[in-house]
Amino acid sequence: MQGLLGKKIGMTRVFDADGQQVPVTVLEVGPCVVVQCKSRDCDGYTAVQLGFAEQKESRVVKPQLGHYKKAACAPMRHLHEFEMESGEEVKVGDRLTAAMFEGTEFVDITGLTKGKGFQGVVRRHGMSGGPITHGGHSKRRVGSIGCRSYPGRVHKNKRMPGHQGNIRITQQNLKVVQVRGADNLLLVQGAVPGPKGAVVVIRRSIKKAKRAS
Amino acid sequence: MITKAIEKINRENLRKNTLPEFRIGDTVTVQVKIKEGEKERIQSYTGLVIARDGGSSTETFTVRKNSHGVGVERVFPLHSPSVAGLKVESSGHVRRAKLYYLRERSGKTAKLREKNKAMTAAVAAPTPA
Image (cartoon, rainbow over all chains, first blue to last red; front, side):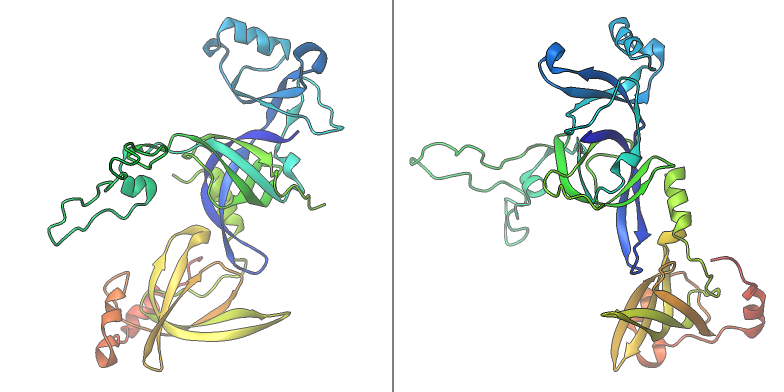
């Protein structure tokens, strides 16, 4: 399996072997249940559908309930599909935990960032804005957005005010500081997208695929 | 809100050996482990504790001293393994939790009044770090 679903719990600091403090994000990873195995014969591609966080039966619509009944597992809040790693085999009903990341050095984490609403260019793009004093009338304004009759239009992708945040991003190459199999926790160095309690997808890093063991 | 999981991690990162009790306004000597290549040695740093910040395993304390006329402040993580030891040299009389006002002072005005001996004895009863 390339990854698992997890929940962001919060941040703290831990000490490394040299006594230095390392900022870490604590993630509750799994346990994820294999709800469906997609095969080339049946679905046209191979993948594994994982479920995370149990849900009350009354909160699930009947067609979905049937999907979970088929896998003989409790209804789940979140479902996500993952590709299989070569030579790996799982079957429906298997439970996957944080122990899966034992020996993994780096992970990529995908999640929905915190929504910031409609923001101006100073906050959204880090523009410097205009002069505050000396009769400045464009304190936090965009400023010029282009030339005159040539090109006679505003260039595409010109950075302007607009909605910021609440987009899906992937933070790559986060170092795994600790894997706590017993508590199903994963400690990664640095920040992870989203607020506390956000559901994130944790995958083995694609750029730093090397494993420790 | 700190969740149980984070509390548990923080508890594991608390220091194993307890440091002596010290307060804001105390002059302390901190034994700092310093790594030079492969070798490890201990350096002393003496100064006035002007602040304590944070809680649990993330608590830090700030030690200010005057080094050749230049004010130096170092922030130590209280539970870091690199803080090998700590000794309270003297205790000053203070009325606030953060002594940042000392930064603007120099010479005699930057000195603290010695703590009342009877009061010192009363608070000397050790409590866990």
